[in-house]
Each structure stands twice: as structure tokens, then as C-alpha cells.
Amino acid sequence: MLIALLSDIHANLEALEACLGHARGRGAERYALLGDFVGYGADAGGVVAVVERCASEGAIVLKGNHDQAIEKPTSWFNDTARASLAWARETLSPEQKRFLAGLPLVHREGEICYAHASASSPERWDYVDSPTAARRCADAAEASYTFCGHVHDQALFFEAPNGRMTKFHPVAGRPIPVRGHRRWVAIVGSVGQPRDRNPAAAYTLFDSQLRQITFCRVTYDAAAAAAKIRSAGLPGSLAVRVEAGI
Image 1 (cartoon, rainbow, N blue to C red):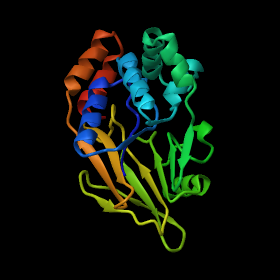
Image 2 (image 1 turned 90 degrees about the horizontal axis):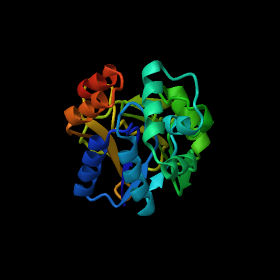
Image 3 (image 1 turned 60 degrees about the vertical axis):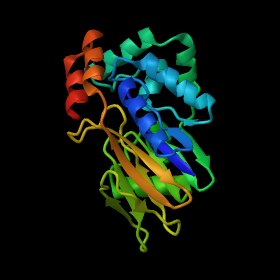
């Protein structure tokens, strides 16, 4: 089965639709949406509507820290993030807010574990950004394959024979064999706000039969997404980040 893994959409409807279309074109049979559907961008309602549709069609859907902040505002977001979250609270319907509030933090299915941040204490929203963090995540997941978002840059961690995790920087579009004899933790990238100075949307495909992971980048109309941010009166820096991939 070919599974499309999308995370950190951040109210960017143009990027989400581009990635879903790209995945469909490559034969994706199932979808896992790993959270942070709102925040930063200006199209929270449009994105959540698409996510709800995907959920109704059988997609795995998880809650991210920005999604949780719709229900439970926190003080640790910066000013620009708080502004975009306030906009999301104004524009989401009550039904959409209830949908986000009811989402789980982690989902396990056979040999796969899905999480927004880390399978280890997912409510703490820790970043899997080092081999040590990846090892904690894999230990908690108790699965051969763990897929996470939260960190916006794509990465792959794999378990060496000595039990240590090693970080690998993937090349977009190049399939990577991921045999089940070792544990893998993949950071699937950000659909709506990549931060590696490449504005192309990022998501990941996992072929569970061939045991291959392909990290994908998809060009989309970032200017349109940025224009919505400016039109909504949100901080201009949020639009620049979308346009520049920073």
C-alpha cells in the first residue's frame, strides 16, 4: 500500500491541494495527516474542511500543537503565531473547532506509528531533531516505522546494528529502501511552511509493500497563499516565509 504522509499544513490550502494532487497522481491509496492544520497561514477553514473530508474517507488524522492551541491557548507561541491563531479562532466554524479538539495525538497501526511531534510523551510536543530524540521516539512507538511532523525539515533516522540512531538527509524524489529489520523514524516535512529556503511544499510517500520511503517536494502557487495572508491583515513576515521557504 502506498501511504501519503502530510504534516504542518498551517492553513495553506494551495500547498495542501497541490500535495494531495501529487500523491493521487503517484497512486497513493491511503493518507495520514499528522497535524498542525492551522496557524501561520490565512486559510484555516479551507484546510480543515479538506482534512475533515479526508477523515471521512478513511484518512488517519492527528492533532498538532497549533490545533490544540485553538481550544487551549498557550503563551509560548510568538506574536506572529498568536496573531494567526487568533485569526483561525475567528474564521473556523464551531464544528471545525470540535473536530480539531477531538483528534488523537498518536495512532498505531500494525508495524507503523504516527505522531505529530514524538511518540514519546506526545503531549509535550518535543522535536525529533537529533538521534537521541529519535531513539526516544522509536522506543516509545514500539514499531518498525514511525512517522512524525512538527520539525519542518525532512529527515530520516535509522537504527544502526549497535542500537544507535543515525540521521540521514534525503534527496527529494529518490526512493529510499527501508527494510523492516531495523527501526526507522521519518520526519515527513511541512506541506504549508517548509523552512529550508525552498518554498516548494513537502510531504512523504511510504510504500509498505516495497518498503520504500520517498520524500517529495511539490511546487505550488505560494504567491496566492502569501496574498491571502496579507489580505487577512496578518503579519507580513508570515507571507514572506511562505514565499521564501524560511
